[in-house]
Image 1 (tube, rainbow, N blue to C red):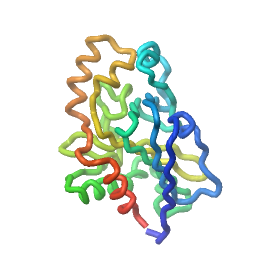
Image 2: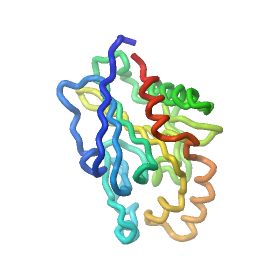
Image 3: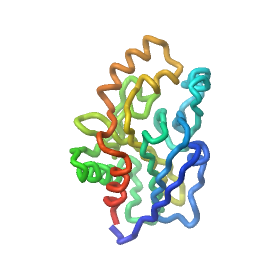
Image 4: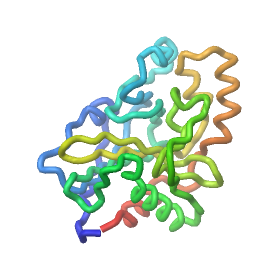
Length: 223
């Protein structure tokens, strides 16, 4: 693109402060690779608190936090989620005014990284594809730039845009067990059973070590 390089910064800590981070000034191309020491249920910016069964989360020892980007809930488990945020300034060649196309390049990078590890993946082009459960759960829907393997979503993407630039947030899971996430949501037992059956077919974990995928992804970031 412009020949610009990425700065890669890694950090380990609670999910809440990471999501509350302000964009740095000046904003430059940066990849934040983040990991958590304890499980966290992360709600999208517009989700009401009422979607969570707070008693269940408290009993399970799972903190509930909120991110500043949209979409449904994501369950982050230590060592079982690859969380990477990409910071892109507005003046950058990767910046796209059309929010519906803004993550296309990012999906291509994830698909190339997976291909480098022997997994054929597809970056979604086009609009938002909802399901019955997408207002609850991030991995229940498919958005522009998100990535699928054999038709099942493996990379979730959300974004927060400001006058300075964008923070594109990505999560890849090493384990997809929708029952665990559903047990933390304010759903009936019947709804949880129905959702679990449906969600097994719309999302999946990646079948490669997350550390290897991280290295491959950073290698495929556009310059």
